[in-house]
Length: 174
Image (tube, rainbow, N blue to C red; front, side):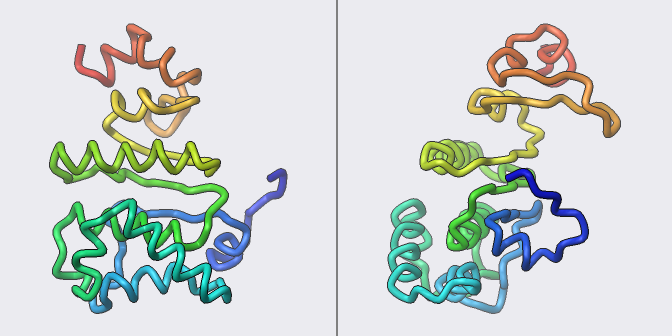
């Protein structure tokens, strides 16, 4: 949005619509699924809107609705990833940062996570996705960046990078 975020606290960034789902999920393990989602809305005061957004998260991730009273720490890795993403959505983000959302998940869960990422983007949320599953990420990315040893070495449209022989050889095992 044209403003520097340097030196700002995470709480200020969330208020501005910049939200991160960290690698490792970071759920509140001793709280229920519903309580975790409510924590995602801590900056909001619109009770009805919060309830509506919880219902939206439950529509995206029906498994969470089934287990809404379960403690987050007792869920599988895939369920915790769904919860972490749902909690981030409760902030009504403008920009969603996702760090390795498919890490350690079953192939079925990976499919679900990428489906949700694509759907979130279609709703107008900008997504910055850091993902080792380069093939899946580049299939849905508008724009991609290839990094080597912390330096950006290539950039371009996701599908263009996906078709690039250098990218295919280095990152897709071809």
